[in-house]
View 1 (cartoon, rainbow, N blue to C red):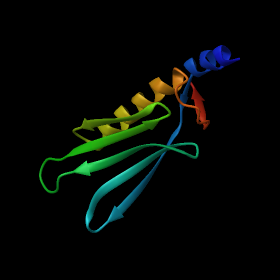
View 2 (view 1 turned 60 degrees about the vertical axis):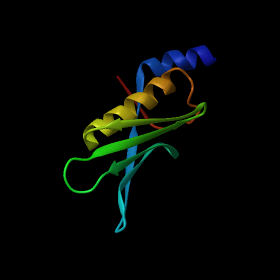
View 3 (view 1 turned 90 degrees about the vertical axis):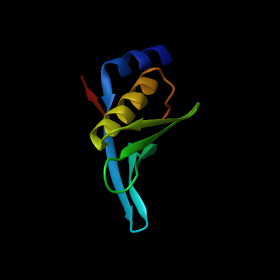
View 4 (view 1 turned 180 degrees about the horizontal axis):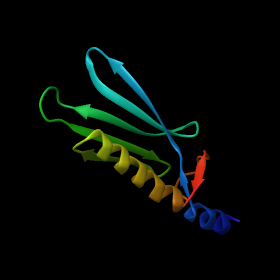
Length: 100
């Protein structure tokens, strides 16, 4: 059964939802969800001028911190990192998916 689920995941990709949380004294932060599971956090580093985004991806085996130069790159990297571990079966969370 587990093997069949992994094969099914190879033909799908998770659908993500983003929630932005802003506070006057903190940089912009985006929480990334797959279904109801909180899977990553994107946080802007630096103020004014060039900035980078810190990406904190959570999974069952631990956590991973990454950096990206833009919000678009941060979103892509967080999605790709989570999707790779999800397809390997490292993620137990269930959420919406799209056929590819």
